[in-house]
Amino acid sequence: MTRLRGLGDLLAQFQTTSIQARNLGRCMEVWENALTDPKRPTILLGVSGPLIAAGLRKVLRDMIDWGLVDVVATTGAVMYQDLYQTIGGHHWMGTPTADDVLLRDAYLDRIYDTYVDEIKFEDTDRAIGTITEQFPRRPASSREYLGFLGSKFQDPDSILATAARRGVPVFSPALIDSSIGIGLTLYYQANRKRADRFILDAIRDNYELVQILNASERTAVFYIGGGTPKNWINDGIVMANYAFGREGEGHYYALQITTDAPHWGGLSGSTLDEAQSWGKISRHATRAMAHVDASIGLPLLVGALWDRRKVWQPRARLTFDWTGDQVKIRRTRP
Image 1: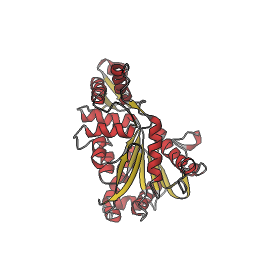
Image 2 (image 1 turned 45 degrees about the horizontal axis):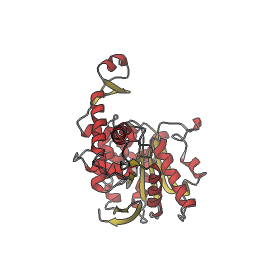
Image 3 (image 1 turned 120 degrees about the horizontal axis):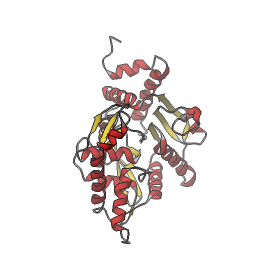
Image 4 (image 1 turned 90 degrees about the horizontal axis):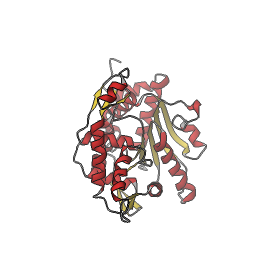
């Protein structure tokens, strides 16, 4: 250990240890394989869990800015809390043993050991409803809508603003199950009698994802947590393969960080091996799964990859040229 020269060396050494340390080291290896594959896989990131409250906002932002991922699918809650901080909200250190009734009286909401401002949440909800008035009055996917929201802010630390600037598509297949959904409900209330209002088209999300997968010679997936983003990305490859004529198998690279266990039968903890039975992960896939808290595992992984950036840089970026719900993908210089 005294000879380690950074996080890159640490996670490389993890590969020769045991249990979850070895699995986390293996995750770095799989991610690097995807980053250096000459076929230039499209890397899709699935994000769920209280990651902003856990302090990972900048980590997620850097993953997009550095080109470690190409497409993001997320819960609405992650993007909402990104917006909450963009408009001035804070996450404060607290304690899980607080008196929650007293917190309620103080208009503080608790996320395990972190507090957020209920009044600022309401301000954020209303700001979303107001900003949505500027969106074209027609049906649109969550990808188009979230790109619009990201374009409205100049916050350099924002995940959504960075994705909009970099042209990285961000989808949220269950967007209404979040406080962004509250903001959109306020917009709906103000516009429900109009025939020309903005409508969130969830099925178009599916179709747009399939277009990305069809345009990708090879795909890689990285799941932080599980939930809807994991299932949605995995279902997308099934749709692309049997319903839309994509030639090929499932995702060629796959890694996941989760604290859920497979023996309960839920999707968030289900193994990447199990996904092979559905055709979601290729039978030839390089894959790794670490059962570790994302607030620990993700910064270690991202920091290690940046430390070892000479291994995978320069890597061409992807430019997504959208015409309605159709996309053409071009490789561009980093």
